[in-house]
Structures are given as structure tokens and as C-alpha cells.
Image 1 (cartoon, rainbow, N blue to C red):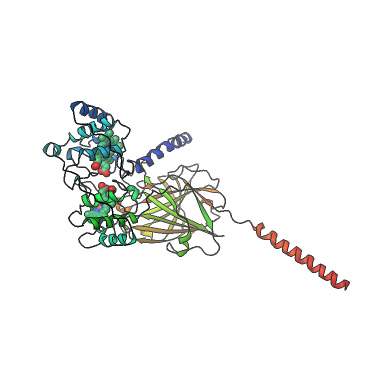
Image 2 (cartoon, rainbow, N blue to C red):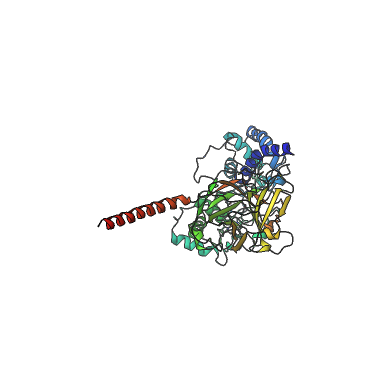
Length: 505
Ligand code: HEC
Ligand code: HEC
């Protein structure tokens, strides 16, 4: 057992890095204007070069015949493209028109952010052109027609509060209704969000527009302009070329970009929990939280223990925490497109994971192991605001503490595609099976999250790596005592001096 665990641990670093690379990388976020590489014309030699590279680098996902029948393809979300359809998402021609050679060249060069389609810029330019022609050869669409010229893109209207306001109005205006898919706040939680399919009948979800770094085409105003004018071919993301004029399209692009910061948040390796005087907040929307810094934690599907989660929905959890003399309070924030509380088998849920033993050693990141158990503070949607304390020695070995030992409190709000959950617990308890929150110590912390409408339950969940909390050290009592003592001594000295002087008088 021991050996098995340490071996598992060794594998852990490799697996977790691969996992996170898979979930977050893919392509590079594109530079809006990039230098154009010279076109290499189609010829039998160039196609042969493309074929050779395709068979070495692309076949595992896109299949020998370009039809995406391949070993890796069923485990990937989104699924690798079936090239026989001749459908390309990242192109510059009008919807339903063929992609240009340059479009296909660009997407091979940059990859697609947030997917397993990585960038291939390291391949020589003529090989990438060979790949373009070889990829096209799988589809009859290209044999029948030619790609038209790219759509025209004028000069962007610079972003301003007025432009953003106009875009905001259009976002939910009758006849446009971006919100029907993307949700009123753009969090990907519109009424239609859970019922969408690609043209090839796989599930697809509207983008969470508050996470710009997940946009497949890119993050500049021009990229959003293209997406709105052309749509995303093969998916329900429509073209609005007929419904919006140029100016309106720029306003909408400015609004979309106003919903998030340009950079992907950097994970918070170590979060400093501030000490406050007085009461901790009673709810997730208490004003006290406004001044508390936010921790950022990327999540990825759990793909190590069966059954696995290859298509996770929760890709990000945020956390705030503060403490006082007696208690600690956590605020967890995450996006979830539907509030699922009453389905029998699937519920939205989240867990904060800590080591059960106070020695600071990190347990195995998937719920600990028999030597180093994990302690979980878990919330599940059907239990409203209640938090369950759980001890775990593995993904499938979890025991909820007895009712009398359950001491954590919670309160939850679901608001327009976002959960905000408050968890509160005593800093220290007498229960040996509880984690203890000792100021000044590095305390490992990790997260698990379940999206009920995505049929996530048990081991099918999103997980994070380990991060750290550190409770800001309490001001030692001596800091107060010494000045007080000094004041008393000085006062006593003065008192006796005055007495002495009086006596002498
Ligand atoms: C690890 C799996 C994987 C490998 C390897 C891979 N791809 Fe992809 N590729 C994908 C996925 C997944 C998509 C679809 C992403 C989406 O629909 O958002 C994709 C999409 C594409 C597209 C369509 C882009 C568009 O605009 O819709 C092209 C072209 C492409 N890949 C070319 C290649 C070439 C050429 C290679 C080899 C040099 C390659 N891919 C290797 C996973 C892979
Ligand atoms: C019928 C549903 C639907 C409507 C309406 C809709 N979208 Fe989308 N949108 C989608 C889907 C689905 C995707 C994801 C496509 C994908 O992942 O390939 C998407 C993706 C996007 C993206 C990200 C593109 C990228 O580069 O990844 C943006 C930006 C966007 N939509 C903006 C809008 C705006 C603005 C409107 C209104 C003018 C709108 N959408 C209306 C379904 C919709």
C-alpha cells in the first residue's frame, strides 16, 4: 500500500501538470495583427509533406481519414474536428461560406485556446501550408466550390462608457438576445444554454463571456467583431450580419470586452487570510467581503480515478477568507449555468479540502490517503446553506462526521449563473478529525466542484491542485502587555515620587 501511494505521488506531478496543460492551453491567444507568412502554393510535393506531418502529429485526434475517428477523440472536449464536413470555426468569410486557405493556415499556426488543439507554429511554414491542402482534401465541399473573399472589417469604435452602454442594451434587445444563450450577465447561463448542439450533434455551451481568455478566436475587439458578424460555424452561435449594422457590432464588442479583464487570472499560490476585529460576515453578500482580496483557483476535470470527467463545466473557483479570534469564514464563488437542487442523482456541489492532520503535510490531492486523511467542508445544493464536515482517505472512502460533530455553518446565494457560498467554522476544535486553523502556519487547501446539470457526481467532478492558506499571524499579547506594564511602572514611580515630595514639604 505504502509503495503504491508513493508511486502514485510520483506520478501525480506529471499527471496534474498534463491535466492542467490540457484544460487550459491549446492555442495561443492571438495577436490581432500578425505578420503574414508567405503563401506556399498547392503542389503534389507540398501536399505530400502535409500528409507526412499529418500522419505523425494529427492522426491521433483527427483520424487517418480526417473523420475524427481516432483513439484520443472520444476523451476530448470539445471533440476534434471531423474534416470531412469542411466546417471551420475560426474563419473570416461569411457564415456558411468556405474557409479560406489563409484561415486554415492561421488556425493551425495558433491553435484554439481552451481546447486540446494546440498551436503548431514550430512546424516550418511550407509544412503548415501542406497541412492546409491535406486537411482540405478530406472534404468534398472544397472540391465543389471556392472560398469567397473575407468579410470587411472597418475601424473599431474605441471603447467608452457610452459605447458599452449601447452594447449592453443590444445584448438583450428583442431580435438580438445574446442573453438567451449567454445569460443576462454573460456567464453562459441563458435559458437555451443547456439545450444546444453542434451540427454534428454533440453538446455545446455558450461561452462564459466573463472569461475572455477562453475565447477561441481571440481577445481583441476585431475578434469579437468577426464572431458577431460571422457567428461560429457548426455551432448555434448565429451570425448577426443581417441584424446589426457595423456601428452596433462595435458597441456590442465593446460591451462583451467590458465583462472581463484581459488577462487570465494567475492562480493564488498562497492566500493570506486577514485577521479582523469583531464579527465575521453572516452571508455571502455582506459588505465586509468587498475589501477582502480574492484568490483564484483554476479547475480541471478529474481524469485519474474511474469514473472520470472529461468534459468538466467548472473551470474556475474564486475564494476570499478572513478570520477573527474564534472563527474563520470562507467565501467561495464559481460560475454554474443552472441551479440544480432537486434532481435525484445530480446536484451542484463544492468542497474545500484541507489536511486532517495538523503537521502541515499535504495528503494525496484526491481526497487524501489512509496515512494522511483529508478533511472536507462540503456543500451540496439540495441541502441549501448547510455544510457537511467529511473525513476522507481516498476518492471513494469518505465518511461524514456524526451529527453531533458537525460544527460548520454555511449560507448560499445563486445569482444569474454564479454561486456565492459562505462557510464558517471555529478556528480550533477538540475533534481530532477536524482540520485546525493555526495562525502563521502554511495550510494546504484544494477544491472539488460538481456541476449537476452536467451529470457530475462522485469522482466525476472538477478538481484543483493544492494551494496554500496562511492566517496572518495574530498580534502577540505581549505587544499590548509591555506598553501597559511600562505605563503602570511609570505611573507607580511618579505616584511615589509625588508622595515623597509631598512628605518632604
Ligand atoms: C490532441 C488532439 C489534437 C491534435 C493532436 C490536433 N488537433 Fe486539431 N483540433 C482538435 C480539436 C479538439 C479541435 C476542435 C476545437 C473546437 O471545435 O473548438 C481541432 C480543430 C482543428 C481544426 C479546425 C479549426 C477551426 O477553425 O474550426 C483544424 C484545421 C485542425 N484542428 C488542424 C490540426 C492539424 C493540422 C493537426 C496536426 C498538426 C491537429 N489539428 C492536431 C484537437 C487536436
Ligand atoms: C443560440 C445561442 C447563442 C446566441 C443567441 C448567441 N450566442 Fe454567442 N455563442 C454561442 C455558442 C454555443 C458559443 C460557443 C461556440 C464554440 O464554443 O465553438 C458562442 C460563443 C460566443 C463568443 C466566443 C467566441 C470565441 O471566440 O470563442 C462570443 C464573443 C459570443 N458568443 C458573443 C455573442 C454575442 C455578442 C451574441 C449576441 C449578438 C451572441 N453571442 C449570441 C451561442 C449563442
